[in-house]
Image (tube, rainbow, N blue to C red):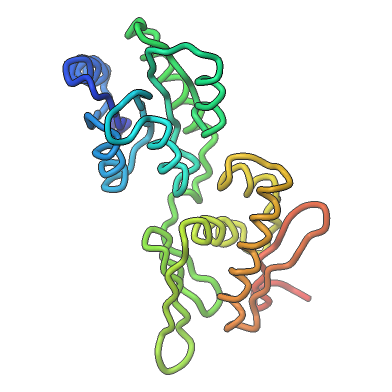
Amino acid sequence: MENNRILLVEDDQNFGDVLRSYLEMNDYDVTLATDGMMGYQKFKESEYDLCIFDVMMPKKDGFTLAKDVRETDQDTPIIFLTAKNLKEDVVEGLRIGADDYISKPFNSEELLLRVQNILKRSQKEKDPREDIKEFEIGDFHFNYPLRILTYRKGDEPIKDKLSPKEAQLLRLFAMHKNDVLERSVALKKIWGEDNYFTARSMDVFVTKLRKYLDKDDQLEIVNIHGNGFRLVDRREVED
């Protein structure tokens, strides 16, 4: 079994080295970056089971880094490290989508226990369909990591490059194809919260996806009143 992978972004090189060594002693595979920009580059280059971000960093602070991560990834757990313990900082971190928040100085064993608990919870909740990277949707092939939707019927394939949120939403529809995708599930996974404004934003993205998919007249995204949406492939469902 592979070790869980952790991205640690901490601008204090000495403290980062100590923390990395401690986590590696406890069987974690740790990548250390020493500023927010480097941390974001490392995040884009690989996949991680957990992120630990210092809040106060040069070039890109921890909150901004977390916002960038959440643009494309709503699932990877994030722990913030900070020298501050201000209520507004805690609220801001949770609003962005942090899973935990720990103030310096802290006991390394306490951090280890929090890491273990978060990973246990996130892996327990993980849907096995989350590991699927490519989907067949009617006459389309969808490559989620590259965000490319290819229409394959006709003389020449037609490729569309989706935005990050378009890709995330289409992935959820593909994972739940012919079943109901609850609005609240999609909103919390992609936008991080379920409210009037995020719901209106989701409606805009559903309309965009309908335009991409209308090349295949057997595919339809149907409104399920009071519940959500359903991506229907009529070739696979009974009338």
